Image (cartoon, rainbow, N blue to C red):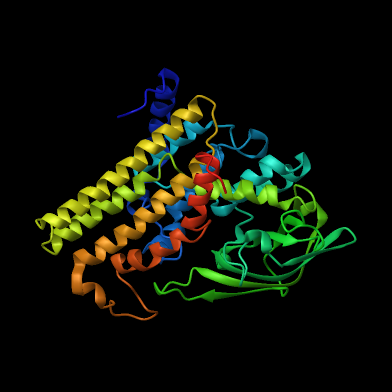
Length: 401
């Protein structure tokens, strides 16, 4: 099933396809599997760091910046081109089809940028958004804290106003990409006397200098992509408070909505690639003719196709001007629970081979060991599966609390 998006979108797709063919450097698509399923908390795709440092990737990045195809959904005045959601979805599809990367700005593009666009002043948008587009500012997230689990409103990191500045002191944890960031968006408590949801502020702070320390956390997958962070008097201008003092909860909810929704219209692409890799693994181990394995693989393929059709439904809503609501929680719950079960299926397929790690330093794991171990994090970060079920029950189904 394909959506008929009309002749205008068909023309846009054709033009974009021609542009990619004309501007993509030779060999770019073969540097690494750009659409490989990235698992938060797992090991980075082998060869990814080398590919990102390759001159062909840098040339591609320059081409995309010149064409305003980095953060293209943002307003033109801040470096984008006001691209609507339907065209962004088509852009993602065409980049994936061509095997070339869509240069993205990580959490700056997917989490901080949307919050700034919704809640910031025009002056703040002009100051922060172009630096995200250019890649000058790379953000990590300062939400979770030790001892509070999923109760985000219970954060204790303090934000104290000192003249024209705000000074932050506290500890954050489970920070992805801290080693690559020079900025952090922090949810902190600026009014300890107010009810816990009302005394919070959303602040953009420098993530460099002696006031900031972070330590990698080794996960059971062997990866150390998460960090714990220590903020000891980190100072930022009050100008960096997005949404106003003590109004951070609303801003944080905008961030979380985008984190849970993610790339719902195209996320099936990476999961489909991973599925076919697992089919090849089943053939390698002689399990492809086992009736039970075949049934479980058929289940997995069905789940990936359901993601695809769900993405098409989201795309149809956007095309009609309707913004998705609690569907973001449905999407997050669906893919995270699917991926955890896929990791279990993968280990069942490889059998006893999955009990032995590959040789090498730094606790290496195989592709399917990494999937099995790291996929469990997906049911926890961005709100646990239990929290997503509560949101769906209360906001989508209208059930009582």
